[in-house]
Image (cartoon, rainbow, N blue to C red; front, top):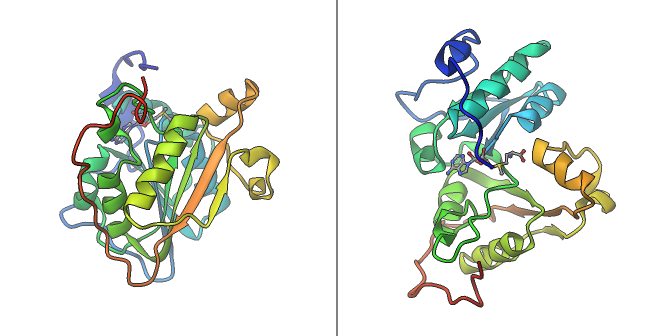
Amino acid sequence: MRMRKKKNADARLASHEGLVLSRPEAPIGRTEGRELFLEIGAGKGGFAIEMARRDPQADYYAMERVKDCIVIAVEKADAEARPENLHFIIDGADELPLWFAEGAVDKIFLNFSDPWHKKGYFKRRLTYRKYLALYFSLLREGGELCFKTDNVPLFDFSLEELASVDLVPEIVTRDLHASPYNEGNVMTEYEQAFAAQGLPIHMLRVKKPAGYLPHYTEPKREKTEAEDPD
Ligand SMILES: C[S@@+](CC[C@H](N)C(=O)[O-])C[C@H]1O[C@@H](n2cnc3c(N)ncnc32)[C@H](O)[C@@H]1O
């Protein structure tokens, strides 16, 4: 759903100084003794804010390309005590190499990524193989990609894309909330809405194996209608 344009977005962001980062001169690396967690497509920020509050020993970065979403997120973060370990980034996933050093990231979260269901748009999905190669170059060995969605075709697509780059998830569940993996689960804004409608939440986690070299090849042809239905 397209977000309604926020009035005075820049002024509203400016009044929350320090929460939104400017592009760094050099990619961000790990801080000794602290974990680095990254959410891509953070929306209104509820997940990253709660995760950062629960885990002050880790640094949380929440990337979202729509400024109007980040306006809501920063206001939410500062509505109660701001978690000092939380940082927002207004940028698109393609720019990740400008932001983070290779091997710097412990966990990447993709929550309810846009499904881009129309035929021909599959390369925009955040679990397309090109993005997987990017994420797995940023993750350290043993680091983890965590993905949640209500969208069955997107989940199936994501499993295929992982297989195409020789990655095997350690955990796959098609009903997260009824599974043992739900313990400690932080619900996102979209997750709350879908769960309220009774939709099962799909989740997978995949670790970067030792010695894994990120790679991908573009598919030779566009997917057929059956493989990539509207
Ligand atoms: C469906 S919303 C989900 C928001 C939030 N994760 C949640 O679960 O409530 C997907 C979000 O991903 C953002 N997004 C989509 N493609 C992106 C990209 N390439 N880089 C950064 N953010 C992206 C969209 O702007 C949107 O806010």
